[in-house]
Amino acid sequence: MKGKRRIFSAVLAVVLAVGLFAPMPASAATLYFTGLNDNVSFLRSSTMPCWSGGVLYVPYTVFDANLNDNHINLGLYTSYNRSSNVVTLFNLRQILVFDLNDGTCRDDMSGTTYDSRAIMRNGRPYLSLSMVCSFFNLEYSYIKLPYISQGYMVRIKSSDAVLPDDRYIDAAQWLINNRLRDYTQSLNPAAVTTPNASVTDPPGTDPGNNGGDVPSVNPGTANPTNPIVIQEPNETQTAAYLAFCCESATEIDRILGILESDRRCGVFFLTPQLLEEEGDLVRRILGTGHSVGILPEGEEISAQLARGNLALERAAHTRTTLAYVSAGQRAGLEDSGWVCWKETLLLEPSSTVGAASFASSAVNRLGAHRRTAYLTLTGSEDTARILPALLRQLNSSDYIVSVPIETRL
Image (cartoon, rainbow, N blue to C red):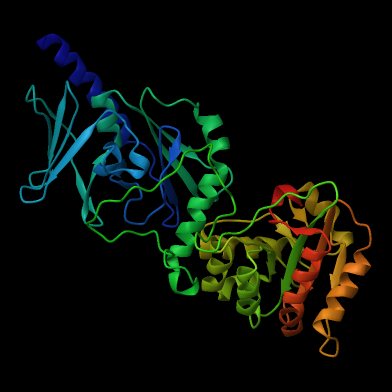
């Protein structure tokens, strides 16, 4: 028995040494999502995995079904004694104890100590992921997310996990994007009129019963009190996508309010300058379910698009492939992976036209555009004035205003 323990200790030391020399991401803007088996936890600044000394740490609560999001059972239970500052993890066969006061980690049944320790972050203990997984025979993955810039998934798996990592990352895309949207919204909760806007729990508290399974994803529920209505057109209806080209932020708040009251979404094409200067507004747009694209200024299109994406990344930890450019500029950009907006109709209302007559005229101009119609509006005062009438006219004329995402455009 002693020989087996020595072998286990030696193997564990090698595993920990590998963890110590793993490369630590350098960017402070990097986002770490937590996956538990086939689920995705909420993204919170207070429970986000972190690196320290080249070791990846996670809050102790993720290992306990009574404390983690959606009660995911990894086969472990935990306790944290605040007075002694000791964290204990256990199952029917093993007990692992972290003492934060003296910086030790030990097998409570054998007395074996390990070169690992717990750290405090955001008022709660964080534990070495490699140490816990090695000791309790769990697996973990550290995966770069292909659809979120500087986004990584830290996935912890027991024998109950079903999907391999590649299929899991694909299947979880909508849910991960929603977690990011909720997190972005929580950075500026005052801008969104919902009582549950913030998902960041107070430091020192344990997360409640929040979470979701990968298969049960609804990509359009950004605001739980006034959710976006996602409808698919039938054979007699047309999907209508709305775009707003904004060179100024003056009317964006008003347009957002109108869309929110009608539970509809659009894509907002913003100039690189707006993306740089209006971080709170960008987070509100994304946090309430809309898409963001780039409206380049000047002749250096590629440079402007790169500038816009850099600003978007800084404001909301995401990037876009949506661009609004002239027809002659599209081919080269599409070859580079950009999704260029191709409008069916450009609507530029003037101050002299009534809202109802303009909306009726716009729908008549669309004619028989089945199955999709792409409407471009300027981000102007007159657009905000006629928008409610346009939404009503589209609805009464069997146009379904759909969520504009890049895979549909």
